[in-house]
Length: 401
Ligand code: CTP
Image (cartoon, rainbow, N blue to C red; front, side, top):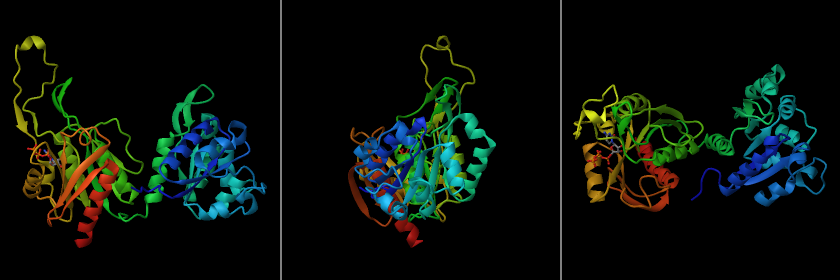
């Protein structure tokens, strides 16, 4: 299924930083996601990498000079600028940032940046002192004032051998920034979506929790798809191994009680709540402040009490409520019962006992049911594609309000 990067024309400007080897990976990730990637290599970048490295990945000519009569950019230096959906400079050296700030047009990248009406994103990579120098900081401010999107740099190991600020952000994060920019005017622009993710952890003592096997992937996929469609996204999540998509506001919580509090606050101004989190149904009646010693007991019966039902307790006034029904048997029947008892607009029924879908998997196979009686089976899809379909249904309800 298409995603926000499918068929997008991305001009990737690569400049002469040692980090430019990462631009090959970036070009590959963008191409794999379905984008058309056209690369401009500055003269310094060509000292590190050959055009062939990019050409082999993008299957597009690589622009190496403004005066190259074999390349389209040589003949018509604004051609790339005109057809670009976004121009990304990654890595961007201090020198290139200075040139962009001053509108210099002495190479193919400079002319493209001046001529384009598409959004521009710059990902700095340089030595920490160069980055922090007043000149570079002033140039970066100029870029920001002109609505150029800056992504990074981050703190980490630098080519000089030192650790500091100046490291190019990882290609996966650059892709996430690009998606955020390209999605801004999508069909959910102006809407706020709250998504919950992960499994809550109910503590028995400082080193022991009761939890479940939720990976958080479904909730993160909801956040990613909603951002791709222009929504403002609040992700209320337990700690997971996943990286939150660029543009999301993340509220980290541990247990059902904290998630309840966060969801209640965040839902007040939201249009849609999608509860993809696996919330513990019970929590220990007592949580010990000290580690419980083995010698204290031969057997241990833990007394549990029910947690609040978060989605049921949130007011549905002006809010589309989407719940999941994680089931292992009588799936549709149980899902419909949950929709009614929790006052949901949409319920997403999934069989969590299936190995191909459910907890931990990248895919899901669900049935989307709504309170108007529509029932739709998605078949086995990526969690991102399932998220897209859930949001389609939520959008239908928003239009009806
Ligand atoms: N949910 C919630 N608060 C809880 C428990 C669940 O908001 N304390 C939400 C889940 O995030 C999900 C929906 O309710 O969107 C259904 O969760 P599920 O675990 O399938 O159902 P339960 O209500 O816990 O019922 P049961 O475990 O008996 O199937």
